[in-house]
Structure formats: C-alpha cells, structure tokens
Image (cartoon, rainbow, N blue to C red; front, side, top):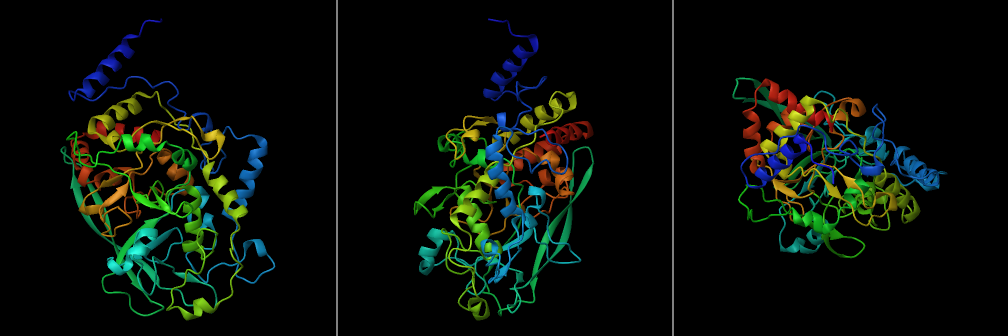
Length: 471
C-alpha cells in the first residue's frame, strides 16, 4: 500500500472533522477524475456548441440515432395539413414551433425583453387554487388548470386562431450588502399579461414564470438510483442543519401511478420521455401517445375547430428518437480543477454549506441507455425540493411542491452558459444576471448559506465564482 501524501492526510482529516461539525473540508488538490463531470460520457468541447455534443462514449452507430433525434429537436414543425406529414400538426396554440427555439444550442433560455415583450425561451405556467372538484386533474397534472387558458399561457398561434395573450416583464430592484460594504443590486420580475384572447382569467389565477433550462446530462440524472436520491432527503430536518429536502411525488402517464419527480423547475416530471411529451403538447400543441386530445380548452372554439396532424401527431418512434437525443447530450469537462483559486472556491462552497443541496457526486445505476449506466457523475444537485423562501416563491403548488419550493438545479455546465447561450441569466425566471446575484436570491433553507457568503471578502467572492465558473 502506498503511503498517503501529507496533503491527502490533511484533506482526510479536514473531512472527518467536518463530519463532526467542527469545520468544512479544505481542498488543496483536485480529486481523481474530478474534471470528468459525466464519467466516461464527458465531452471535450468548450465553445458555443459545448452543450450540443453526444455523450463521448456513444458508438458511431448510436451517434446516427442521436443525429436523427437532433433533427426532430432542432427543425420547425408545421401547420396541418401539410405534405411534411412527419412534422405537421403544430398548434393551434403554442409557445414555439421547435424545441431548439427555447433551448437555443441546447442551453439556457432567457426572460422576455422588457421592451420587446414575448420571448420564446420563456413561458408562464397557470393554475387556480384546487378544490375537491379538481381531485382527478390534480392527481394527474399536479395543478388545477385555469378554466379558460389551461395550465400554460400560449402566446403564439397559427393563422385564424387568437394567441392567448402577450407577456411583459418589468423589474423592481433592491440591494444586498456584503460585510465588507460591497453592494449588489438584485432585480425582481413583475409579470403583466396583456391582450388576453379569450376573456378575463379566474381572479385567483396563480402565475409562474419559467425559462427553458439547459439540456446537458439529463439521461445521467434520470439514471441516478431512487435510493440514492432518497438518501439525501430529510423532510423533517432530523439532523438540525436547516436543510429539509424532499422528493416531489408526481404522476407517471405510463404506469398510471405515483413516481419521484426529477425534471422541471419543481421536479414535476418523472422521466425524460414524459418531460418531452409534455413539452410537445404544451409548448407546441402536438399530441403524443402519452398526451392525447387537444391542448385547447373548451372555451377556445376557433382553436378546437382547426385540423390536426393525426393521432398522435408525434409518433412513438419520433418521441423515442427525441428522448434518445436529450438523454445523450454530453456534459463538458470541467476546466482549471487544479487552479489554486478554484480549489479555494471549492473550500468556500463547502464552508458555506452549499453542497447540502448541490450534492457534488452520484453514481448512476441502470439506465435507459447503457452508455449512461454505472458512471461516477458530478452534477451538483440532489434533485430534491427545497423551500427557497419568500423571495423566490411563485405561490403556485405543483404536485407536492409548495409555492416556495424548487428542485435544486444541477450546476454542471453553469460556467459555460455565457459561451453557449450568450448571457448569464439564472434562476427559474432568469432574474439573476450573474452567479453572484443568483446566490443572493437564496433564502429559506439556503438562508444560512447565503449569510455565510455575505461574509466573504473580495478575494473569497472571486474564488467562489471561479469555482462555479469551472463547473
């Protein structure tokens, strides 16, 4: 057995002390394989196409399926009837005509421009307070839809059909102040929906602004064993650390039973196939074998009268190809994992307690695609719900998620956002214009971590951000 190095001994000692609650670990060197965020599936691409590459361990034959799935994800769908029967049936009401229009270059969306209005990579979810009469729809959809406009405002439509409305965002601002006097301006979005196409909404309508999340590593998140997720759950905060993560329990359209939610800002979908089918249905008005019928409500008569593209409009074969593509979008390798400033930032990340929710590592189990199985991955999420406080609350429950709970978003790839998406707007509604603002919006269970960060000086802030940018 090789003797441990002095730095390794120091690291182990620090970690053991942290386990006893005495201090956080101090990281003086990178962990073995730490740069490979997705294990052998990690990709080595660091430009604007960094989020659009197939898992590195896909065979050439399997990459052909990836390319076909990409074509259905990227190319626009058209109005029915059309000669392009494999891609017709768009709308009548919708938010966009292609998946790639929201997930531009498979990256993060952005909120609506305050001046120009609607943004196709942002949408508004709707619901009303649920009563006993909504029990069945709540069981399957997690919400009671707004009676006229449904569960999602669709601000685009095909000719002959009125869009449901237009979305406008404005912002109020406030300031957070660090212990050393450094100030950061935060902006809070104010939503306005104008030009309603089908009359007034229910007076108690609940709204939630959502931007499209990045698409990388989704198949790996899907392959994390359920037991590993539940191992991090502590709904009653039995260890007294202030963190009480819990899984969302949602409806699986195939099994017709309850399952743990993994995808969506509130973990409202149990698997990628259903997540994609839901997006086809609500974002583009396209039916699948999972979501049939019509996304128009019974009060939208012009919408109901329009022709459709067959039943289903998205065949199981196409849905499977799109799901294969979205499962196998590779995660870029980390950069500068050995840089002293990055290691200092990693130490500060743990000192603040951020890793309690942004859990660094998992090992995948059985997977829908064999390339994704048994991989040591570093997504920095627990996929659990956490109460993030009043500042981030949308006051709109979804299945078991309350109006102030959100799923911990994965942090892998966050440092590539500017290169891929051309912006650095974060959180569920894009309110944060950079990573520091995103941290300062944390509240609720994360209030203690935020207060720790507010105590950091200039060098420590720079180190923390350097670590996050390396992910």
